[in-house]
Length: 443
Image 1 (cartoon, rainbow, N blue to C red):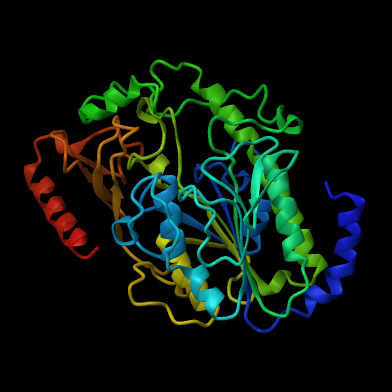
Image 2: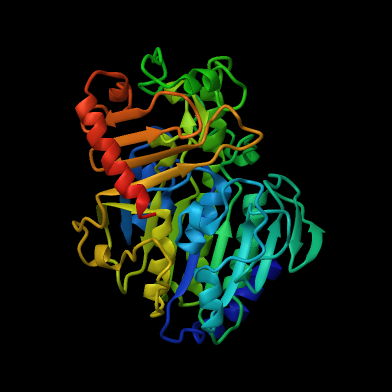
């Protein structure tokens, strides 16, 4: 994918880039859009191969139980950056304009890091990127082919496939001559629907029978009424869209180009002798439903919607091949980055540094977390919800809607089919509600 000019420029900057290492690590944070936790080769996917994502896990850590605190693009992105829940950082929907946000990027920038945001931002239409000196970006969702990009304030149409283009700009920026450590936030559009894979990957998973999820044929008995309403809608339902597995196939076909881009980033870091001094982080902004409970999209508190892939590589602190079972959250990223950079973590950050988990993968960082989603004007099918996910239980309530609560024993019911809140065990429900109120009061 590199033309001759870029190849020669790589050779020219490699020795100089190596001189930029100054003790503090570099950071590269790669974020996909809507990639669920099991859409990885290393997770045993039946047809998707992701060798470079898998390499991050093999040479670093895979967090086996990683979650978002809000399963929606903008709030989740703001939580990754700020280390806070949506009710604290204030980005509660996909239309909030973010032109200022205290984050790991603003703190790194003030401490002398060279910072860049390349790709999807999805926190308003402004070209402002607080905390980032260099930006190559676009408003909203962007487009997969021949995008118009805003490059440090100037618009330019760039021919090609968006994932490849963003990788090109990222590799070029990584290879720049610099004396300071750097932080790159690379946000991909993939695998956001409606997906358009590049022609070279249109045969990925072709001819493979993708299995329907165990809850795809649920009668929704015991579920709150909103689930059936959304299941019958065009916004987040599949009961009137029987071809949802074909949509899932195209979704998968956008991921190999992301994986190829990670491979090129590995090559750029190796070529500039910066690989082992760079913290390489790979996540998704939320999970995605592909027919579970007759639903698609995200927003809901079901496992497939809130679980994400979360991988990190940094051999100076993370033993290769680590699998951490602890519950970790998107709000943990910011304090972890600051801790690795040797910087103090602000007291108002609600996440936790993951450094103790690097040292002890069996450590239990938390035994529960709070989940929140706020109803959006264009997506009335999904109401405001609040929830608690513990090691065993999941409780979800709908504070602005007269609807059933949900309570699942995940140890016995991992597919969330049997809503215990619809049953007769009022003593259990009362106990869980009290635990939820205590958790919420501290958020």
